[in-house]
Length: 304
Image 1 (cartoon, rainbow, N blue to C red):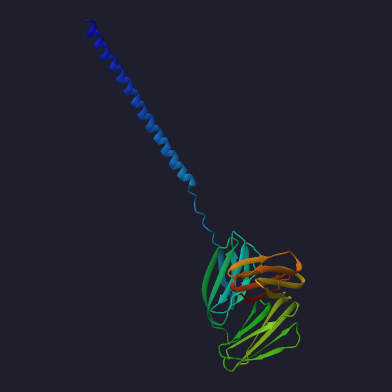
Image 2: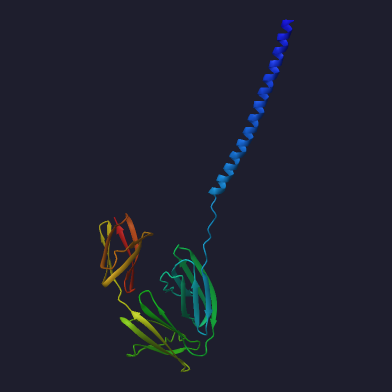
């Protein structure tokens, strides 16, 4: 009898143990599910925190208007504008002074005939924006005069006429006229470069076509000195020297595709030595003085 009771108590104890084990097993499963859920949420949350929204570059607002013979360029941007350049058709590129402003405005002459204006705007972050627009100028029977300032601080006098030109003449500050006759091979175009005298000047240009119709145009422009620049090879080194009688501002150059800048403040002489690589070395250099005069040169040297 006692033996039977012991057996029944043993079975009862085993049942109780199984219940306890099952309870803890279920509790562990529930806890695991909760932890996994929290872990998943943490991983998802972490992923979202690492994702950064893409910042889109703001685009400058560019308005290009037109009067009868001129183009009005008006640019507004949320970032400083470091460069504005343009060119007509396949002609040389021209620069518009920006002074790193947020607003740039300029009036340029519309050439005669069918023309394509190519405009490029660059902001302080190096973002580049390009604009292309076409124009047609039929003219009023008179010659069309363009006066363009080159990087060499010269004035490019460009005159066109649909029928043909006889000649142009120009004067600085009401002095003696310089006359340029039309080329018999192309009477429709006269393209002349004029040196700008030092200081503030007034340029007056007159153009006469084959019908004796006359167009005149004036331009106020300042003539500035340009730095004197020299390049000298010394073995495997290149010595760059730029000087100005007033003061230098900066020297920018590209050597073998690498860009450099030399800026010692306002000094009269900038001299710099740089190592060259074996073989051929190519350099393009631009030196600017405090008056805005710019000298540009290109060179090549070889290290054996």
